Length: 330
Image 1 (tube, helix red, strand yellow):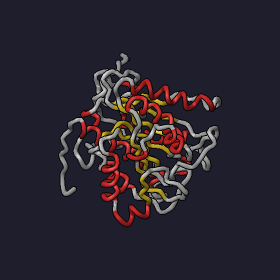
Image 2 (cartoon, helix red, strand yellow):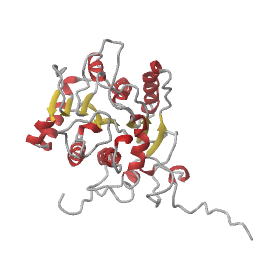
Image 3 (cartoon, rainbow, N blue to C red):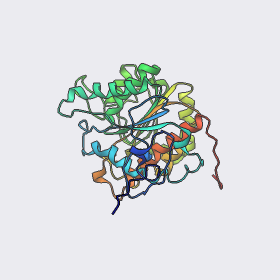
Image 4 (cartoon, rainbow, N blue to C red):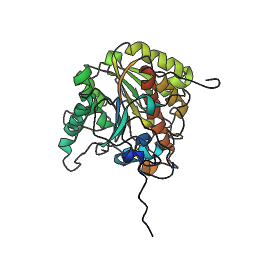
């Protein structure tokens, strides 16, 4: 019996390692095949790349339930359906409009904790030096601190837009560091321009606002997500904007798989509308953090996280000139 050679021209399946270009799209089995974010090609070649997706699998700074180190893997798995059809509601195909790659994960040594943030910052420095934007998948929220440091080196002090149940501005003593203190430190160090920054969805107490505009979850429920978007846009102005999206900003009904859930949060549709509303701003990067799959059910949280991140990419595609083709009343 003559052996049949594989047809290397058959562009179906496993494009994550078989595709040769960053804008290719192949049919995939949604329930099988190699995983990457949105089935994007795994690559470390940064030439002419628009957006780099990278995992930051670190959770040693949590204060309650661990497990977000497995977040990047879960978010990638939650993204498998997103590229089967064009983006809703725009009709844009981000994978064709943008040069996207999945860079894999930042290689972190959890047994040398003092090295972790320098490692993440160096990782981000290398990617940002190429001119690409970063979409970072956490990991606990502390990873935002070295990511912000890297972005501030490139863009100057950034306007932070933080979607979160927690303020993450509780004090530290300069040596202690966890996923609830990093934005106070970043503000004190001038990495964040607090006069341009807004926190959205908060529903835990802190005695100081540290100069941020705070739109609590009850306020958003009473006044609507459009009112929140208007305030965020006006405050950020033309500043470089970094979006830090903690999945626990969503209510546990919509995102149970997280380490520090707080009831009374926002719905997944509000999270999507919020990200879409940031289109007029100078978006420079995003992180999506605090997905802890051990506490998830039926991938509810992972799918929400992947969808929100994918919407951010669609917004970037629109900013780069992609033309929306919506169908129906939007």
